[in-house]
Length: 163
Image (cartoon, rainbow, N blue to C red; front, side, top):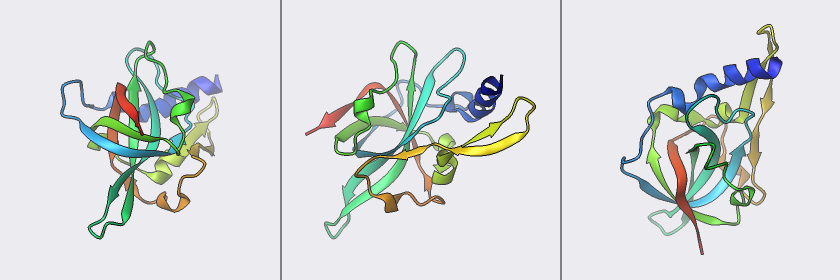
C-alpha cells in the first residue's frame, strides 16, 4: 500500500502531466557522455509514455579551445513496448549523440533530481531517498546541487554511440 501511495505522489511531477514535445518538433543533436542516472522507483504509471531520467554531459570547446562539459537533464520518454534504455547505455566511457527536443517545462535543479520524496500509507512524510547515481569515471564537480539543468526529451531510437 505504501508503495502505491509513493508511486502516485512521485508521479505527480512527471512530464506526461505537462505539455511536452511531440514527434515532428525540431530536434537538436547533443554529443557527450552520461554523468548520472536518476534511479527513481517511478518510471510512469497508467496509459501513455513512461519516463527514465539521467544527467548527460554535453561536450564542446570554449573559445580558447579548452574542453567544456555542460550537464543537462535528459528525460527518455518511451512506451512499454520500447523498453528502458539498456544498462550498457549508462557507461561514462561511451560517447553518444542524442537527438533531443528542448522542454523548458521539466528544467530542474540537481537537488530535485537527487532525492525522491517518500510518505507512509497515511500520507505522513518519511525521509527522502537519495536516487542520483553518478557514473564511475564521471567528473564529480560538475553536479552542483543548486544548478538548474536545462531539460531535453529523448525518444527511442534517436541516439547512437560515437566512435
